[in-house]
Length: 535
Image (tube, one colour):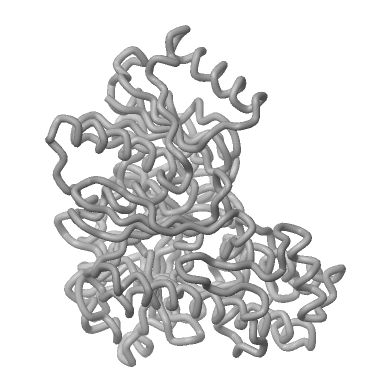
């Protein structure tokens, strides 16, 4: 039994017991978004889910190298409190980018691939490239923490008044409202298999230099961001901010494409992770380079997936020693906590709530057709940043006005798009540039077909792209049945799916969390397992 731990921002834990996987991030349990620190609750939760004890753990795989004495002492104290005085016998440290790349390669189902991680920084590097063969990973390229593509994009995020290392997705969304107006090759370029930062600085110093480059008033950035958040996109400074976002996104895509083309010469398949792999538009560029069936983006691609990467790296090395390693394909990420019917009923009674037992697919489809906003809570929670039908808020994608209702209810930025969950067999019909297996994890942007734009305007972004989850019956039969019922009633095999949380809060984990968000957001209906509560 192997325990993977990430002690840092996006802390979490994974427990690997032969073919059983249990994973959760600390933020879902302590309700602190992107929690930084030791994942004590996560460690205890994965042990509980596996019905295991601390002494059952044979290896503790820790993501990251702890160079600072105070941080190392703190980690050791936390591990000792759970695993006892001899915990050091079990600990193996796995370097940051190796953990990222391992998370993607060892879940891809491929024997041979290129494994790449790109982020802001970790253990002194910002990117790593590996040739992966027969379970072995050999590094052939890297970038230092100074030559960081992730930090470049984070600095643009900060420049525009958003929170760096958290709101990069807002910059990507905003970029679609304008056209690139700046050539950024003098800022950062690709040099071989490494990125090269011509600014020579990172973090806030890079943000200041970018403000000079763009002649953008950094002191007014938060005020401008607030206007953008409200949908005020036409002011002079707002238009400039959109041009900067568009230029940064275009440059990121250009560099990722250049790297992809170089890597394509070395191998036909790419396994990809790291914070920059959250950028679904850039991922689409890589998909066009490698092909739909030759690009795998690990679903928990950000630092929240490091515990998984550390754990599966150690597991693989032990299997290789014994000559037992075989490629493994991750079929789903429903790896988190789940709650039984009795638990839910006891909670609802204690809260004094009226509820009804329903046939979930038929009931949810009916209330969606009525224009209701529905919170859906079922089964095991998703691992990673996307809600994929078990901790989701659903709406009718045919009604474009539902976007405004959801933005107000969830306190979201107006310019951010919503995504669809669609029936697997409808993907070819709804996605114009699909040329292979559709994406199941919302890690990829596609061009929506003309038919889909017309049928489902609420889940198509202003640039005609969409970020779908293709749902297979055999993977999530309950969620598939909801969409299939909606299809029967409306003729469209897709629903709007956004994560079950208020903006700035973690996705709900427990039924109690779901009830809290149901009330705060003013949703019309929440369905917890097969029990429905109406507002």
